[in-house]
Length: 440
Image 1: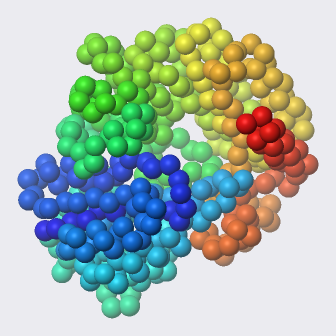
Image 2: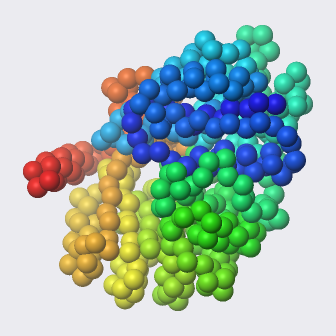
Image 3: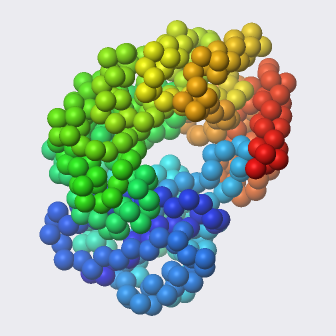
């Protein structure tokens, strides 16, 4: 079967990202020994992405087309942009050129699968959550999609769901060493590897917890190491990013990967997201010695009452611990992400946070610390949505897939009690951008 896998164009020029999901599906197809003719198109690499898509379809005459929809929007209140209109144009471009079945999947699709299927009738099938098994099985069952778990399909004008499927067992997973497209085409520092899937935390704003049902599945450590070795030795990759929600949960698994990197003498740098509670100086030294160049933390809040409201499993003292660890370990570069205008924030808490950040700037070199502020985007079926309802910031019938910036702005949580703080931070951000432009 001739298969075309398409990395969706978001509707504007953005930095190309390696197609991690398609990479997994491609390896799954190869492991099954299926003799499909698989082609790939990243629409983001063309000045006229839709024309490139049409030409590719005419060239290979695919019998099925898969589209990866990674994000719904930017999730950035300072850069609001909605990606779904571009999907509609992609679908119409395909349908004008071929009648081949269209399959859509990816993280964004899974978040709003039923709504997207209803909104875009040109989609024939949708992959809910992980696609390695569902996609492969669907290729042989287009006439009976209800027999394949995890599939959205159409029966006449009605959208149907075949039912959820068991999560993929990762403990014995093979290394993914076959490449749909060479990593070096995306730069030497732009490849992603997952060591695990799922998350056991309870952050108030995260829908991933609901989708993955608090299940944490660990990949075989040797498979991860084999992929890293292949990338550094054969693929001209010098830095990778671990996509785990939290790399050091559990700490034993993370330590085994670091120790394996050292044991196998892998010459590759890496970065990941870390939990403040489960990190100490010994682990930091192990991670740095194994090639970690950035420890990303997302405490989101600072005072305990704010951390509790956000559903974080950490305390103020553990946030402060990240500062002392970075100060003590000179090779520890850190990034800290905080929520702008979070629930249960107070003026006292905001001042305390500013003093903490000032301390960071004074005692640690600026180039070793990155600090980010951003509003939380509210997702349905989350505790943050319940807070927004209680604060009368949203309604029960809230539209989470709006088509205008005005409507999208309403999806970002802003604490009504601290709007003045929110205004100050926004002003500082705009001022810093103007200063940077002037200096540039």
